[in-house]
Image (cartoon, rainbow, N blue to C red; front, top):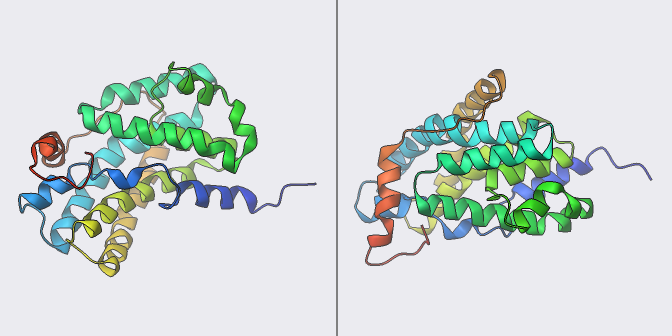
Length: 230
């Protein structure tokens, strides 16, 4: 029986949904520190964080890595992308979070597509031969679904924004309606960042400059009370 044309999209929506249990709810990526110290206390403050997050970590690091993973012509190249992204993460907590989410994604991927169980990248991560970062894992899964690069990057980007907004909601900074409004407000900048990444040559050098969030993430383990792991 021929595959229904809409099936790849359905698989993408499931894999990228915040309800898909990869453990993203456990991480605030430094936002909890900013809230605890009063640096972010309103919708406007969070909107500024999202704007800069799109400009730096997403535009310079996460989206280029996902693009390179999606375009990887061979398993060794995909492993090289994963390793390069691993080296670009300067904070141990962020590295651990991305690895944990990516590995969980790879563990669950065969539930969506049984054929992915034998994917060389999945085997390499499970054998400890690759770190298995979340943007790389999701991009590899999208490629196996025959999802085009623009839609893949859109899924990676919107999932990252959702994670920050979800953390802010749980921290009591905003409500659900404001969260939806903030993600919608950041979407045009995310779309522009995706277009820019797609127009660039595929590369294996990733890096961003967002010291406010990076310092907050580094200080997070010292908080007297923590709702999130990092």
